[in-house]
Structure formats: structure tokens, C-alpha cells
Image (cartoon, rainbow, N blue to C red; front, side):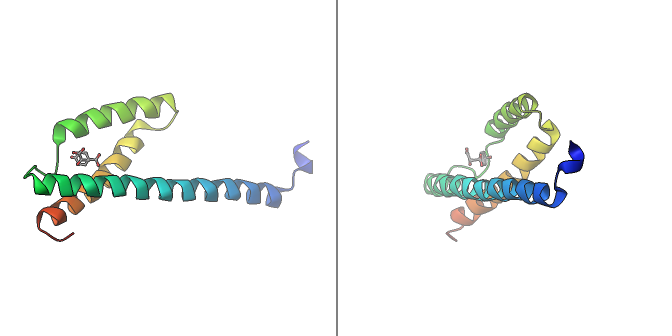
Length: 100
Ligand SMILES: O=C(O)C(=O)C[C@]1(C(=O)O)C=C[C@@H](O)C=C1
């Protein structure tokens, strides 16, 4: 019966799950940036442009498909991707300017 649920305990359990997911996201983002920083150095060393719009278009289409499958708003998935890639491109530009 729902009356027998301790709402404070239920909230605590859900927050534990949220904290674990947030921690995993931070570790995954750190790994992604570790990889993209290497991409930035490679691009800078070989005179390649920081951004690759065709690659981004492909990534966005893929992420939108995955988001739909996962019942996540594809608009949100695209916004998240663009937010992360803007930071990646900032890092790439810094690497190209010898700031790494
Ligand atoms: O794949 C690349 O060329 C990258 O620089 C990585 C990345 C990304 O973060 O996924 C970032 C910028 C590019 O415009 C495309 C993709």
C-alpha cells in the first residue's frame, strides 16, 4: 500500500541513484575530454580545422536516433551535444594557438 511507503526513505534512495548517475556522467565526460584534447593536438599539429561540421551532422543524427530509442527528448540530446562540442572547439582553438 502506498500509505506504508516512507517518503523520506524513498527520496533518499532515489537521490542515491541520482548521485551515482551524476558521478558516472562526470567520469564519462572527463574521458571524452581526454580523448578530444588529443584530437585537438593532432589537428593543431597537422593544420586541420578545429571543427568538422559534416562529422557533427552525422553525430547529431545518430544521437537523435539513440535518444528516441531511449525515450529521451532528441532536442535535449542535440542541445547537450552542441554544448559539449562548443567547449571541445574552444579547447581545439587553444591548442592551435599553442595554449595547451
Ligand atoms: O571528431 C572531431 O574531429 C573532433 O574534433 C571531435 C568533435 C566532438 O567533440 O565530437 C568536436 C568537434 C568537431 O567539430 C567534431 C567532433
